[in-house]
Image (cartoon, rainbow, N blue to C red; front, side, top):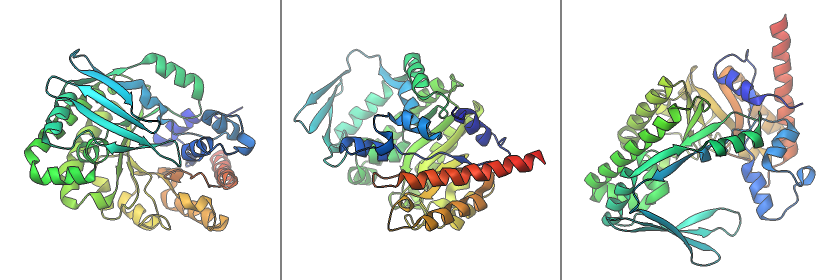
Length: 376
């Protein structure tokens, strides 16, 4: 019988796990890349992603639940459409009284993902139109989607949600791209501030919906923060105020709140304890990222959780199993009960599932010893 990983997740986040460690590796990249390439899944052939977690008796961080809350636009004058321009490219269109917007996505050749071939916002008129769109947007919970996901995943993890990206990260990654957003911040700062204000108000409406649903206790800001995009001035002006506002509202409703920081994080770690967050997900340590585990521990202190922590590249050659286990032991030593152990960021398609099983065995043995200590 599989473990009740949902309850164990809450025990850990509530500080009631008696020092035991939750191992919560994300393997979606490994799975989806192999399916896309028509490669064998080996012993997992024919299984869904949830089926693999159940077979391994592993806990997942189930971000699929993000589909339960979706954008709605009641203004009938605003119309959405999608046009297939070619087998590789789709165009998304929004028709509005203030002007139309278009965005195009192009299929990757190496995996099932897509990248922007045209951003929503490429000039000031587009920015005005997108601001109008956010002002007209609301959010709705869909119980039928929630029920479907509960049936699929069961107790394989706890329902978990991403919030839409905050202000400047939304501009960088969702609407404008880094280059367009950087120029706009310099050339039309007042217009960008109006766009950011519309985003914050829209995301507050999202939080209104979220806070009415106690079944969603674990919330992440899916910002993908990367220090090379965020000089101190931008972090202090845009990220910190948004985080403090969001975390105050979410904590008032009893939520456990993290944010996704990956890539290089060295220069922004100094802000970690000022954000109001309960923990940070996916900080990538050396030999993959730009920080040591000791630097991460110093930044997070004794109250914040580290979520993940194992450099993804350690799950494959040329790195050895000994290097992988050494990092796992060091993570447990440094962070203890403030650790949700996982992969920073995900296991790649060339990652070794046997190594993942061995990390699970290591954690299971550690937890069994904690149980023995508690009985003495």
